Length: 460
Image (spheres, helix red, strand yellow):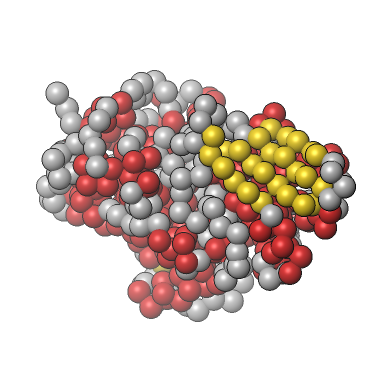
């Protein structure tokens, strides 16, 4: 019987665009468009600027575009700032099996390697679909891993990046297995940055991207990787999750159900585990026009060990004081308070609100509790006003269209997050180019649109 890695390697190395159902191709395009828009918005953050400076020290000239600059670098160097840009506002996509932000590692890697290897838009799409599957399935035991303190994205991004790079480098089945085995032997990362509000979390997928590309180079040059890196006695599952229980569930419906279809998107720049409560708070504020100064107390019931909305993650149950934007982005109380005070959660407002006395008072009034018997997007929220009025909401108030974007919704979101950062002509061209991605013999028309003026330090 094949190991899990061997099965995933066979799937990824053999997957062709022609095998993909139209709905899967369409979802891959939505993932690309959403990720590129978030990366444009992320290029305003200090996290991206740090990554860009470091890339300028490490890198040398190459064929991969460094987004929002005039620079080009080797793929392994371009993915550092590109991945950080795509992740550092925490509004990028995620999947509930691995609880990983797969797009932030996979799409920058796939685009950079596609440029370097001069592959087509169809090959890019197939590589992205394969990599979403590989990363999400590798993270089948993610929940026990992150409850022990490991960050799922940091662990499993290495597998996704290796799969994306390996398919575009046209590794054969054996080489792909070696690359994935190597990636699994290198992976790791912890959740402590969320508790301190430090920056490392936003670099973790980028490290996975760089390591995944390296693993593919090594495999192509003859490295032999561990085939039991997931299920071995000292493998990823045992080491990070503390168990091998039911691990072969990772292969369920492999090749027939593509996990990219289940990808969720974020309306708000906060963790995936906060999207439901943020949406309920947004709906209640929109419906009742609540004066936040009259709020006496907010109680929120969250599923205990839920699959979507959840509490058992570092940094979520934190009511301030907020020392950094990074600390704000993961806090459920911050996210709820933003929607109740301002009617939304926009990155441009986070810095101002995090030190506002009225906002901090509101955040401290929000009480969270885990409740057994709830799951998925289910939750309950009750707002008590100072005159005794009670306002209640639940999971039915969540706008699910913002979680599972159609193409038109994705295009609208792209326009919103890039507003003021990309002009209207560029915005429309990116949307149209992504929509026609499978008709491109080269992805240069897309990556050219992700460039900007020469404002960044030259690489090399």
